[in-house]
Amino acid sequence: MGSTNHSNLLRLAQTVQQATETIVKHLQYTKQQEPSFDQDSKAIQGDADTHSVRIQLNDAAQDLLRLVNGPANEYRSFFMSHYTLAAYQVALHFKIFRHVPLGGKISIADLASKAGIDKDRCRRVIKHLATQRVFEEVEPDIFTHTASSALIARDSDMEAILWMQFDEMFKAASDSAKFVQNDLNGSAEADSPFCTRHGKPPYQFYAENPEKGLNFAKAMAALTQMDRSISALRDGFQWGKLEAPGKVVDVGGASGRVSMDLAAVFPDLTFVVQDVSIEALNDGKAKLPSEIADRVSFMQHDFFKDQPITDVSAFFMRQCLHNWRDEDCIKILRALVPALEKCKPGTPLLINEEVLPELNEVSKYQEHLSRQLFFKMQFNINTILAIFVIASVAAAQQQCIETPANNQCPTSHPKFCAVASGTGVIHTACCQSNVQC
Image 1 (cartoon, rainbow, N blue to C red):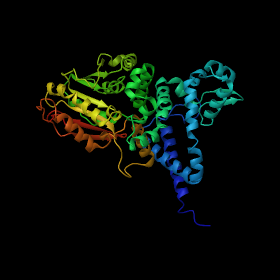
Image 2 (cartoon, one colour):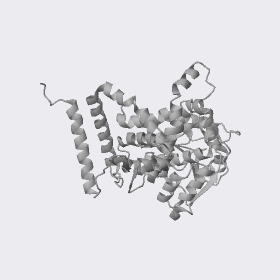
Image 3 (cartoon, one colour):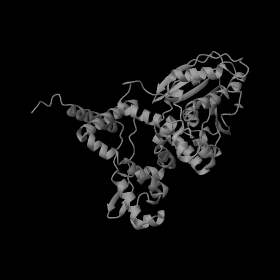
Image 4 (tube, rainbow, N blue to C red):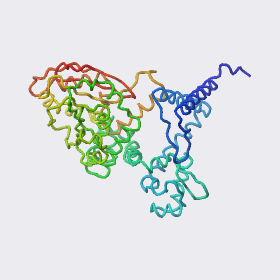
């Protein structure tokens, strides 16, 4: 039998143990309870170092399982995974997460009655999810919440993002091969798998389906809180150097969650949240904290139309362009040019978008999360947007802002300010800005 000194499996297991020990020490030092599957268990609160250790743990644990299970077992689990998504889809559609009482338990018979579904299929769905620690069967046919299911029951934004992904996006994903084949044959009438499946582009679909449009807005807010940290936008630009009182316009800001977070950090700035969706704006108004209510306002605006606000210290667009084709991105950016020309010279335009890592720049776990999002974009658009390659983004912005109607707007070279948590910030203006990144 060979020596275990050079065992890759043991090396991975040791990494798992060391990372876990570091996390346990962090919990003890910060006086946090260890997480459990109990419905009242709290998620681990940590800093950048804790986040880094969590990534190491995920990388090592996943690779260890892949190697021990082997490709055949891994595929056996993977090729059945869409049935788990289907179980979520049914549970969300029939609001099973809401019907299971927090802090209590419920029988299959009562749950099926409340959800409006037959007992057999209700049982199949919730038992399936319980194998993933989503719900727990405490007695035969008696169920209660776990931490995962309780999160969905308590957090309507989390419920919204899951419902969006497991409904319209799941359906669109299933037509990806059909769309690509039609596109290669030159016979694609739709411009994306989403359009192939639903018969219209995403934003038209949401405009014509207000209930789903509101759910989409809530889902975007949930994504902002989940893993799209605003640190690149917050720290990658010197907001404090804007002249007080500064007015910042959040173009395409949905419910304004990002502006609210920035307003809490920069008390000398006011924010105007713009979005075409009244439902999203109303959702933001309802959730606006009282302590910043006098510095965050909401305005309906279609960002394909000329920007109406011209007394601005800065414009920013966060996570807006990645769902649009290149030609549409150019139109969106061009609509800002007349306002930039009328603003004070050097007024910055900040674009905060996803950035794909170079080969081996980050761990496979991190890269997988980024590429999941990147691949998801093809469900909404046909073009692979330049926004994902910073040099191309800069070129697109340069083209957009250097060719306004009157050609009187000299453009500063777009600058790549910062990368954090998978996003980057581009800073440009209609002339060389005095505010430096």
